[in-house]
Length: 253
Ligand code: NAP
Image (cartoon, rainbow, N blue to C red; front, side):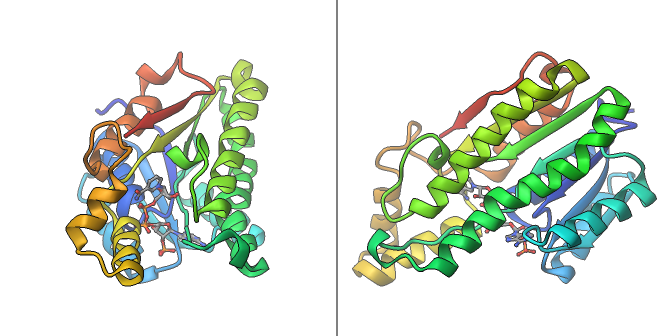
């Protein structure tokens, strides 16, 4: 028996990076876990890792920005695993763009994936949580949700929106036994960071080590965070220790 035995979790973007680490931590704690994302092969590989913890595991290819597809994925997860009690809104994208050169498509896509996607998922999961009198919503926002970021205006705006959604749900659903919190990492060693480093190297001609050092210049711990460290915080929010924590935006940087 783990601390999450009997719970059903859905992690968006659970095939790789931070989402994969969180899905594995929840499975290790005993939860049945559904993961979503667009890359079916990668999802399937992670699903096999999850099942290795002896829990029910489901891979559901789904673009989180597609409202109807999200509805279908939740219906499938519910049918196969049971009512969703833990939702981790992790799927996210970014783009480094000068504000004056931001086009409509880039702005819209980032807002749809990072802000509308979590809205679709929360709307799909909350009725199960209210009916069960227990729920955990964990939104993977960012330090960029608490502070502006040059060349990342759409990303920062989308993460501010996600934190606003988190705080509103915490107030609206607290009495129903549902907790909503956001995790706000600085730099985490995933594909997203590898892309950001490559972008700086390509645009400035700097060495990779210099690019990394410049990214970490303002980071509290002056280091990249591991996905497993974010997962450890998500696990605490999902488990009994998270009972009293609601409406918070927890920084890890
Ligand atoms: P990543 O390695 O690039 O992974 C992104 C994840 O999001 C993948 O699993 C991807 O799955 C999924 N995803 C992207 N677009 C999607 C869509 N339209 N529909 C469904 N899934 C989608 O990045 P990561 O670092 O793990 O990022 C995870 C979250 O942490 C993001 O919300 C990000 O903003 C946040 N974050 C990251 C950092 C960092 O430094 N890495 C810092 C702060 C916050 P598919 O490719 O299969 O669709």
